[in-house]
Length: 328
Ligand SMILES: Nc1ncnc2c1ncn2[C@@H]1O[C@H](COP(=O)(O)OP(=O)(O)OP(=O)(O)O)[C@@H](O)[C@H]1O
Image 1 (cartoon, rainbow, N blue to C red):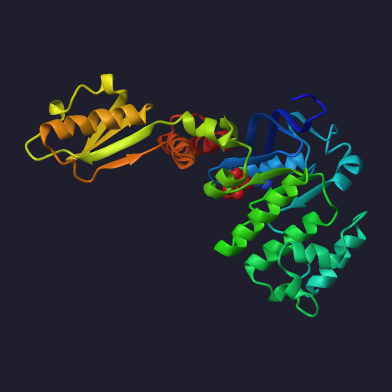
Image 2 (image 1 turned 90 degrees about the vertical axis):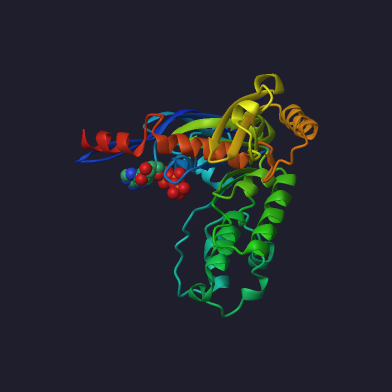
């Protein structure tokens, strides 16, 4: 990616929250780039630092360290240059609830140069039917998310920041938002998306990063991140058989195993080879492998492994580490 193509460019970004009682580093050296027209998803467990990172990219706060460039500019110190070219959908919009939907969009359009017509923005997000006298406070949670999105799209942004855009939407609303995001990207809009829905990232993202405790724990195209994870085979050990009666595991490409009662779980990076070897062994021995489950690696697996590491406290920056840090 050349400098010109890097619409979002983040290097060693840090964010520290602090008060009299102490300080906490929520973003701990995050680096990534997003090219023009790309959709980059930022995933992570609760409190991983997604919103803290995105707010720095939007220029809402100054980083404690590192560098952000949006369209070649510093979004905090060069806010005037960046703001008109980006669209921001925050987790909570917080517009006056007494205004009607149309008044809200009109008010926003008044502060936006080259704004789309109010009707067009509302139609884009499926709120065309809520024009007129409907007040913001009468909207459902999902409709309010759509209104947030309409406001983010008003200025025809080159870069769109979507912070959990489909939270609170029903399945149909989610699909409609995905369609819209896909269409915007097809027009060349660069999108940075944070989400808790893995299928959303899997479906939409060109590339993604999984944040954990303020650091990037995995990054790449969806297939790359998934390919780095093992696949699993599990089954019930047949009556009268012991684990040692299975064929040698290593030659089948099986890299690890564990048992829970009579259930055996095998880990492999070569699913086809391992499954074929195991099934041939069972056929030749005349055994039926009950409760057989063959599961390829998935984004969910990648995510859960990272979250599990957090629970085990196998990496620094765990909750305990945070408490110590705050108390220091
Ligand atoms: N204003 C603040 N003051 C102190 N700590 C904060 C503040 N805002 C966020 N944090 C802490 O920073 C860490 C990262 O929070 P952040 O909201 O960025 O995470 P997130 O990944 O967006 O979480 P979620 O998925 O729950 O929205 C958390 O431990 C959070 O408690």
